[in-house]
Image (cartoon, rainbow, N blue to C red; front, side):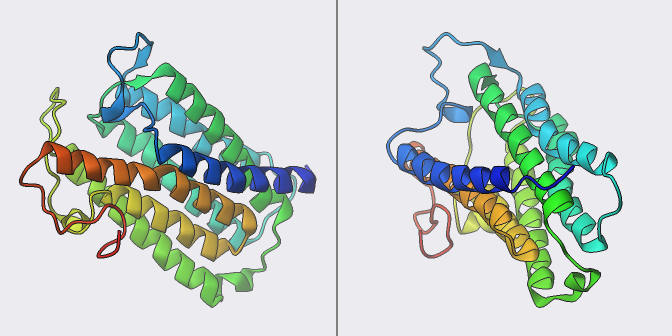
Length: 252
């Protein structure tokens, strides 16, 4: 398969412009999943474990299939960057999904997530395997090393924060409580912060516009969700720590 440069430029633009539009929309409207599902609306719902599994799977499976069917070899640097991307979604698909105790998700949200993850999985995989050219020396470049460190730190924060949130509930419980520990002592959206940091680390490690466009879209899509969670906690719990910020420690 040859590099489809037109597709790369198009989807990069879609992610950048779509991220801005999504961010603006969420300033006034909360996405209706999780705690913000409108129970008055009659809609098909998908159990949380199944929803997370089927919507995250394409982001792992599609790049893997592209790599498996690759004509020729790719460099160690290309493979390592693909491993970083796939590693995140392996964790989300095969570890996070069966452990989650979240609420059911609306079918329309799950379908939209499947479409996005399929598109982005193909986009990132195609770019790394058919377009980007990295020599093995890239693995010692300061941009790659710093990006990898930031990626791993963000992933650790994301996984640890999910662990804290998951253990706030006993099996079958759906009530919300104040998260404590880790970066939750500083921000309400520690899990979101971890994932945003993770993808900007990936963008630095790959030093590519396609990776940056995905990191930017992630910021625009889940950043506002951290803000809505922060407002929710402040309104629901009188004893919620007022020193916490929404997403960026000590700032916002």
